[in-house]
Amino acid sequence: MSTVTSTDGTTIAYDRVGQGPAVVLVDGALCHRASGPNTPLAQALSRHFTVYTYDRRGRGESGDTAPFAPQREIEDLAAVVEEAGAPVCLYGISSGAALALDAVESGVPVEKLAVYEPPFVLDGTRPPIPADYTEQLGRLVAEGRRADAVRYFMRRGVGLPGVVVAMMRLMPAWSGLKAVAHTLPYDAAFVARYERGTPIPAGTWSSVKVPTLAVSGGKSPAWMRNGVRSLAEVLPDAEHHTLEGQTHIVKPEALVPVLEAFFR
Image (cartoon, rainbow, N blue to C red; front, side):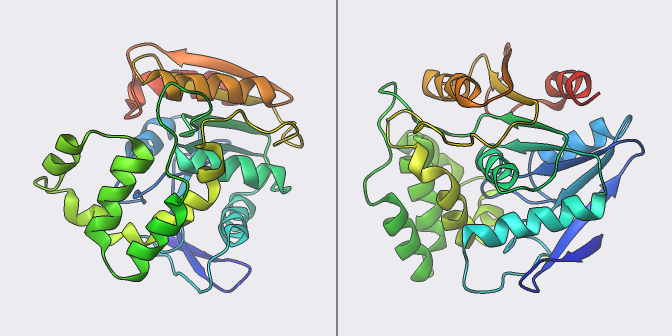
């Protein structure tokens, strides 16, 4: 493990593996270096790239200086990108994809950007998040009700059936999810505005002019696939790719060949 210092003094922990051009990976909600899809992905990509994975603030071994603001997470990512050294390719999954988009929009220098299934609800193929979603999530976290916050996120944010969420409480991973539940409002800050069942506003991410690959899984829900397709349509230089047979829990062996071809 190594660390960098973000603009506000927060320590951000990261790992580096492999050799070759630099690729920085950004996790989604409830994930960090020790737990999440980017960990095996980094190992698989390390055959041809120097891959950086990091703990977003409040997770794993990174700090969490108050007060939170979305710009702080962008600064954290910028510090990791600077540490990696130009040229850098950037990949984000789920809410981490939205963070990556906002970071590039704000001027974080990357050569190429790839995103996998940012959880955008842009049409009527699933119910939108509740109008007070961010407020409710923030209240549960503020009251220390981490388990309730995870359940609320899974039911109202992700849209999982209640029975599935109830079963998750019996799994060994549940304690790990609760451990980082206080960061769920950080993810909501990047995605909630795009989960209201309406199209992406005109001009959003108009400054993201780097070549961008927007990827979705062929077995993912229609709302998620539609969101990724719509994202590719609004970005200045983007292509959409579907990984047949994949879901939101994408397998590295399916994703790696696509990322390798794009980043090269």
